[in-house]
Length: 128
Image (cartoon, rainbow, N blue to C red; front, side, top):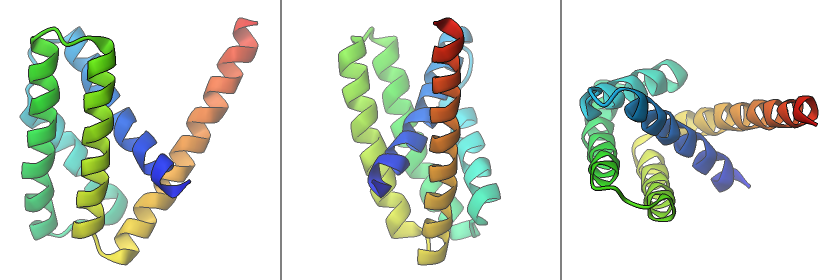
């Protein structure tokens, strides 16, 4: 259950990147990485070492997704790539964050997942 919530947050972050990238092909992976690091810093108060470690790692993952999109990867392959990236990011976060930070991250991720579930249900009700 906890892993699926983490997966959902990272998936949403990457999905945001993909949608933003599709709308404006001029956004650079560095900009997306900075936004993700800043958001994570606001959530769990990263120290400088953590920011540096995560910056390089997330930049690598974002660049990988961007390159895949640029080459015209299929939706199925893109989803698989993003799922793998999400798992790798989750493992990296668990390594880098303190137990307290990681727990706070998980709490926030759960809350966001619940809010997203509510929005989806509300959207389905208005469509039907």
